[in-house]
Length: 186
Image 1 (spheres, rainbow, N blue to C red):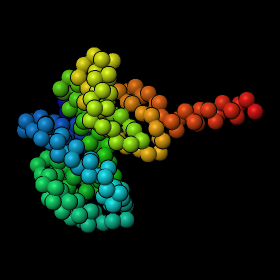
Image 2 (tube, rainbow, N blue to C red; image 1 turned 90 degrees about the vertical axis):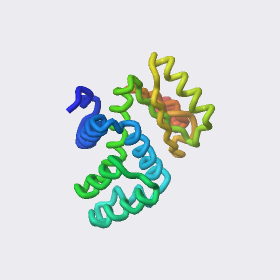
Image 3 (cartoon, rainbow, N blue to C red; image 1 turned 30 degrees about the vertical axis):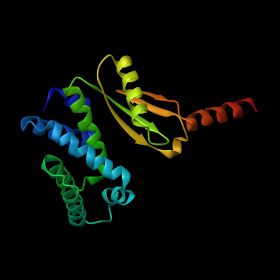
Image 4 (cartoon, rainbow, N blue to C red; image 1 turned 180 degrees about the vertical axis):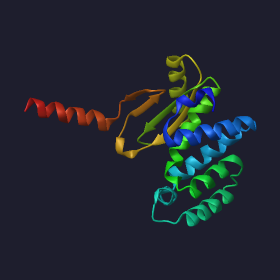
């Protein structure tokens, strides 16, 4: 195991660390990360695919075949496809999004970057993503690998995770805090 294995933990961390070690050994870190980013985007954009990877009802063979077909159609191969197949065979597909997050952390650390995740109510424009990335780079003092997520439930604002720090400036949280403050007054 690598020295960075302490950055990720649990079952997903073990898979992410093993994949990172394998990708580093084969000098395929960037290709594997690009493919995993594509897999994560497909899961995020397809409720059916998200249900498929989380469903304990679907047999492992059916899950593996369905995902192999999806990956083949998206032209995703290599270590990323092998990881998906392995997690399907081991009934660990539900961990795939967490494994991808762990792999991102390991890649960012390897490149001297810090990982950040921004959640917004609506997709951010490219200029907004660039502005957030540059602001976070100033705060962190180094390059930031930024991933974005859309969650309409936050209503507005942003939730920013930079390393282990989280800043929640979402409208949902502000309304919740206001509601609690009003209950205390009454």
